Length: 114
Image (cartoon, rainbow, N blue to C red; front, side, top):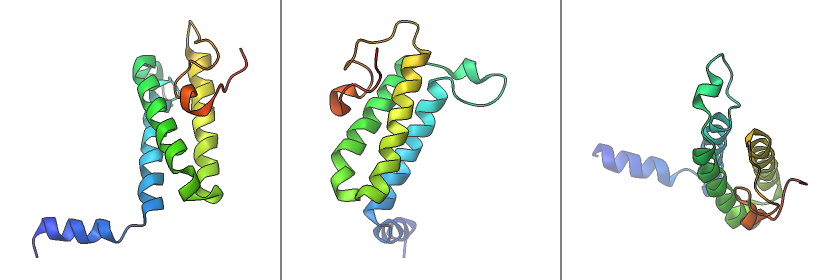
């Protein structure tokens, strides 16, 4: 069997909820770093709100599109993480977006009271 066939067989054994959750965690981690939430003395060097906006919006789309299929056990923590990132983005922004215009808020509705 070739390595491509092995990889295909391996991914075929992974439940969809695990694939979605893993992707969401990667998006959350990247967004947190881009919001300046990384640890260490150079955390602010990685802050990039334009990049964070893209990552948070992608996460909002993923969570919104899959929540019903994931069930509340898996979707609730993803929603909580998304909301925390949306709030962190708002707090990190020198010029906060109007209500409903923050990253992912077109998909989730307004998150932060302004």
